[in-house]
Length: 448
Figure (tube, helix red, strand yellow):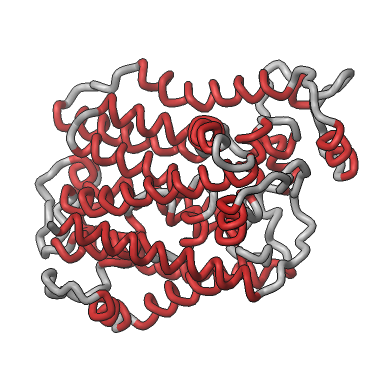
């Protein structure tokens, strides 16, 4: 019963969010952002259904969503698209897009494909966060609010649009559930799947490593299967090999796409073509493309003109920083005195009944701290909000911990959110980022 109620809340809120996107895209003129926007998204021969879909959902075909939809339709024909891994566009958007092409023009078929996939997987994420919270022995209202805060998180627009955030979070949540149930192989498969969706998926194998370190310490013997070292990096290697085969050999490309590529200085796999990374003994495209097209590197984004973007990212760093400081103050005595005993044994569990004192959360805390620092020093800082909210369950647990208990039988959604509003900072952070984020994104205006 409670699951049905939770999923019904998800559907109601998602409808409001889609409606907000439609209204913002209708009343605010689109900004000319001079971003990647290739041709051949023709609207010829469109039906009434096409007109409705394009009118209602076109605000979600913005920014990186265009890259994913283009890859799903044409594959990797521009070098800059190699920064986007193939798992989401080729294994999810493309198959459903092929089916929807029987009813819609191609551009709308792929757009609707991405939106439907994110909607239904988001439904699963809502349930998985709640289930995972209970598996970590969180209080009932804590697990429930974690799911609610997923539905309205500050990076909501990227969970609506054809981005990888929804699917990647699904791979992480399912992997953690299997890991909690000691189904290691299934957990490995989930984290492997995440590695072909996004590059940072490979870091998730740290949870499996921690699991075996804990097991080894308890049994006083090394029990980490050596083949897992190979399996952990295999998905990333196979992805890079696939991109090499896809891009480093000549392709037949339509004249319209060629002209767009030439006009925008985008390298393409044409006759007598060669790219520097293709010629290397170990041809890895990811780092090369990120540096050339996105200027990703240590402190490359630390410029005075980027101060507004650092301000946009500040709230998420305040939340994470405050949590880690409180966690460290709580466990520092155990950590100094017992070190490995604290990290790998169960004896220390919940002396003062604080959920994050349990060492089950140690790998999650290390994981989110590493991602936060990596984003801060190496990546475009404005992506940190969506990057961190899609990387695992801990952020939702942290935020939900601030919400007061409530009567679970109360079905009034407004009453439910009045409790959320009592946490002033969190409420305004979520509310402002959801409203402004959806409105700006849908009109090609810059956002996180």
